[in-house]
Structure formats: C-alpha cells, structure tokens
Image (cartoon, rainbow, N blue to C red; front, side):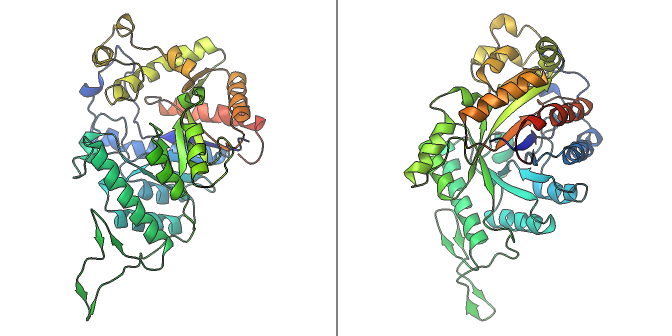
Amino acid sequence: MINKFTTVYAGHVDFPDMGQDATPANERRFSNEHLASVFEKTEAIAKIMDKFGYDMMWLAEHHFQHEGYEAIPNLMMAAVHLSHLTKRLRIGCGFNITPMWHPLRLAEDFATADIMTKGRTVFGVGRGYHTREVETFGAPLQDQAANRDLFEEQVEIIFKAFNNESFSHQGKHYTLPPNVPYRGYDLKELTLVPRPLNLPVECWQPVVSANPRGLDFMIRHGIKAAVGGGAATMSDGPIQAYKDAAARAGQELKLGENLTIGIFFHLAETKEKAIAEMTPFYEEHVKMFGPLGFMPGLTPEKIKASEGRGGWYEVGVPSLQHFIDLGSWFAGTAEQLVERLKQLEERYPGMEHISLSCSLGTPQSVMLEQYQRVAEEVMPHFGGEA
C-alpha cells in the first residue's frame, strides 16, 4: 500500500530558457551567484513538502556542474541545515557517490548528520555516472568493473563501521587500520566516532541494470532499491529481480517491498495541457541525460541532434509521449495520476514509497505549485500517513 510520498530534487537552478530550441547543455554556464541560488530553491521545496506531509525529499550529490543541472555537492550538510527549517520531513541522500569518498569519512559525516537531525537523514549510496566527477576525484568510472569492485569494498567498510563497536578491514583497496604504532601499542582496530544512533541504518541504492551480483550485494546489506518508473512496465524488470534476489538469500518479500518507483510528473487541467507544459522540461532532461546513456532509444545520431538547437523529432528523438507510454513519465490530471498510482499499488502490493519528481529544468514556482497539487488532490486517495 502506498503511504509515503517522496521526491527527488537533483539540484537544478532556474533556467532563463528551456527546450530544444534553447541553449544547448554544453553551452550553459551560470555565475557563481546563480549557481548558489540552488540552496534557496532547496529550502523552498523542503518547506512546502514539510508543510504538506511528504515523507522524504531526496537530494543528489554532484560536482563541478557550471551548467546548473545538478548543483548540490554535499548532502549531509544540506540535510542538517534543512532539518532546522522543517519539522518532520526526512532528507534522503540520493545518492552519496561512494567512489568519490573515503568510506570512513562518508560514514562519519552520515553519523554526524543522523545525530544532529535526530534520525531525519536517510543514507544512500551510488556508484556514479559522470566521468567529470568520479574520475576527477581519483576513482574509476570508465572501467565499470573497477568501479563496482571499489564501490562494494567501500560499502562493506561503511557497514562494518556503522554496526560494530570496533572493526578492522583487510581488502584489495583498503587496510584499516594501517599497521602503525600508536601511543605505545600496535594499532589493530578502529572505532567510528560517532556511530549513528539510529540502527540499523536505513540505506537506499539506485537499480539500473538489475545485475544479479549488484542485487545480491544490496540484499546482503539490507539496502533498499530505487528504480525508474519504466521498470514498472517490464514483467521481468528490476522490481521482480529484487524480489528474486531476496529469495536467493532466504527472504520472502512481497513484490515491491523495500523499493520505490520514481516517476517524473506534471499535472494540469487536461492531459494535453500537461504535455505542452512539461515538454520543454523534458527536452532539458534529454539534453543532459541523453549523452550519459539514460534515455533508452537514443542512437548516436539522435544524441547528436539533441546536442544542438531544434530538429530533434525529424531525426527520431523520442517524444515525451514515448516515455509516458513506458511509464517513467506522467503528464495529465490529478485524477489520472491517482488512477496510475492505484494501478502500481495493485501490481506491487509490497510497495509503500512512491517518488514523484518534477523534471530537470522545472522552475521553482512551478515545482512548488505541483507539489501542493499532489498533496491536495492525489495524496488523500492513499492509505496511511503520507
């Protein structure tokens, strides 16, 4: 039963122009002052979500984006600040890109945020997808096998540090503690100071390929799954694969349990109006994520077209309607969104969380209006505390 409404705000600033005829992604560059406006925008979104009873606001860790698409570099710092401006809203780390951190610094920062926000910071880990970010911080990304290998060892260390009064680790990438003398004795173990007070730590991770190795790793550590809405159209997709991974570990989960589905949405009085209003936001999303491989169906020719001004659909760049049909995007009335979510609720009886997000590029004023509409016109149709 859906009873927790969340959103993902990756940290885009307001843009002066949007859509395929507007400034190409690689030509966007904003002043430091405008990039810093992301924090006022984050505050405004958090306040309205808190006011209207949303469960959680997911933020995303990104770096060096002078284009203004994803401009929040530190999620724990943001969570501590936002906890002072809200009463009950939880702030999700969606996601801390683990290869860009030393695992113990990440564990310490989260533990500090957990304590200072009284448990309202939610942990999340990811492997990353921007070469400019991950490789700049000295971790592999182009070598996906090396990236996964590093990530898995780091997460092992983090959970050892969270869950044990003291620990040690000997692995491919880390020897913790190092074999050094300390104040008259040989160092053999470490204690994370502080450790989280709220144990076990609730942790989430995105699921993209539904690789069995990755899913088995998540289940072993009790990590919950965040999947894109398009997965809900695939009978053998990540939702079923996560349940199957749990079964391999001897756990019986309901279909949809311990996961959330993410859908980009826009509400209007009619579906036609919603599509018209959402299309320039969708086209900004294509500009940003097409070259990164996150838009199914984009061939190199179509990606090249999306990097320029206009003429997208003449060469076959998928339309917004294409992704609405796949289930990862929604444009329509509040009543139609209720119907869509009721279908998901019936199909995935174990699912409690639903993530409804405004697309990249959506102006602040529109985002606030959209979240209020969902709260007033959609959330009351679903059971439990939202």
